[in-house]
Length: 216
Image (cartoon, rainbow, N blue to C red; front, side, top):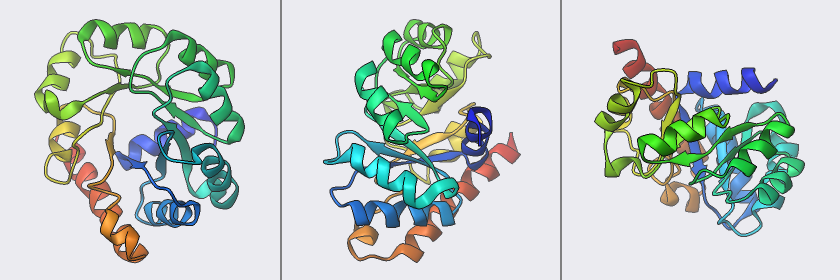
């Protein structure tokens, strides 16, 4: 898939799984479970030990079954390292113009973080494919709706505190997709190796996103 097709596939599912783990084998199984449940976009955070190697391994093992991203990327140099390791998209908690430019250079999806209307607009004007609103639960779904009123062209994805109870509200407010961490990648299920149950959990998140979108 090309960049546009990858972005559409992520948006269609409505959810990106934000993964933090210390175990490479665990990571592959998590990614497989997410893909089986319909969550094709998986974000491996750079705060995880061995994240770059994990991205490389996941890209090699999963191939087209998943769209692998790098999360918590703070600078252009790290973005380049992740892209060369196989990352299809790069996510940052903040907006760095050089990081956006680096992702453009390699033709990769870039999702910088922003919070205020000014930050969001600057990130979008700099070429963000989607702007990450973080932390989203500090402001709630109504904030996205308020931002999109005067800036309907901007694509937003909320991250931070997203769960099955509020996911639909964020989608209805205009989010193109949401980022979900521990509420989706349940630590207990991972620790117990209950991959089928994790896949079922992923399917519930995708179903909730699609139901919310259909209700708009």
